[in-house]
Amino acid sequence: MIASFPEFKWSHWKERLYLQRLEEKTLQIRKLLKTNNNNWEQTLFELLAKNFGLNRNGDVFLQWAQRLPFTVVQKNCANGDLLEALFMGMAGLLNGEIHYPYPQKLHKDFDYLKRKYGFTEVLGISVNFRRLRQPNFPTIRLSQLAQLYHQHPRPFSLLIKAEAPRDLNWIRTIGVSEYWKTHYTFEKESAPSPKRLSQSFFDLLMINTLIPLRFAYAQIQEGSFGEELFRWIRSLPAEKNRITQGFSDLGLPFQSALDSQSLLQLKKDYCDKKKCLHCAVGFHLFDN
Image (cartoon, rainbow, N blue to C red):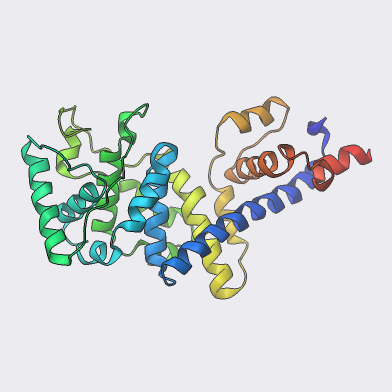
């Protein structure tokens, strides 16, 4: 019966659901900000790291970013090779015996950074390669993240200045360093490819990191947010996953990321918890 819920009510309810989802993400952002002494650039770095790790390595990448001295990241953005050495070394990818020239150079650069800044490498972090498509290998994602900060050392300021999602299209141009254009791992060579961020990956960054951070910044700094929030999320395509497909099978059309995000929130906070009488859809159906 869910498909009989009036469209004008859906429009209002979806916006409320999406705002609820953003509020939950804002709580997480506030916690990170507090830990980071209100450093928005560092908070963005940690959130980007989590998203670059995707589902498989997201928590590990966040832990990695929180233990990584962010001041060292900032001081070495001008040198992409040093930045990559720092990222790979702190992720534990340079441990053990190394038999190839490029990782040997990274290991040497990482030792130099540790001596210069007096920090120790993170122990116990183990990134996962299993059941991942090659473009999502930790080596590739870390190289892309290093290139992002090498080319744009202060991405948070660019995010806040952006007037529309298209102003952040520079993220789509981010690729990997020269070595990783012909490799996915240190050991095996592959066909040449720039390995730039895909459109779908950019959309995920927008949905899960960039828009929520803009929302949190507007709330904390200005006490409100504008209509641009809904304009941005509506400009992105809907996510396709098991949950959105389930709603689609019930006859619910969805076109934008606002639709898919609100349906994910509906499933998680209402359907799964059987809070039907607290849900606009459930209340309408029972009332009729």
